[in-house]
Amino acid sequence: MKNFNYIEALSRLEEIAARIEDPATGLPEIEKYLRESAERVEACRSYLRTLREGWEKTDESL
Image 1 (cartoon, rainbow, N blue to C red):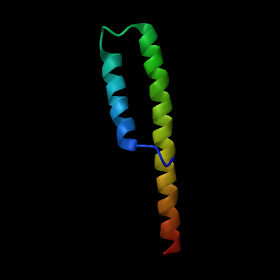
Image 2 (image 1 turned 90 degrees about the horizontal axis):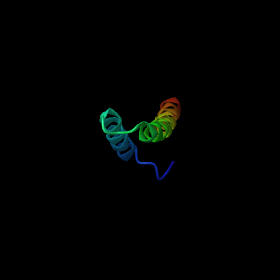
Image 3 (image 1 turned 60 degrees about the vertical axis):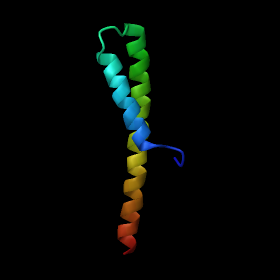
Image 4 (image 1 turned 120 degrees about the horizontal axis):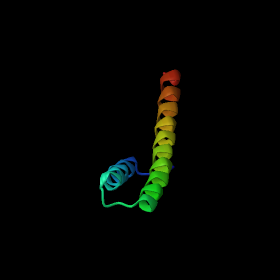
């Protein structure tokens, strides 16, 4: 996850939410956006889990 950018991922999720809420967005596009958002949410969760595990290891070593 060295190349993962959490801030960029959150920004993209906000963009996706706006597009899904736009009445002009068609169902095929919404489906595409939902798939992308699920992938990005999972990547964010994984990133945060990794950070938490690192902090827990640091706390244990103190």
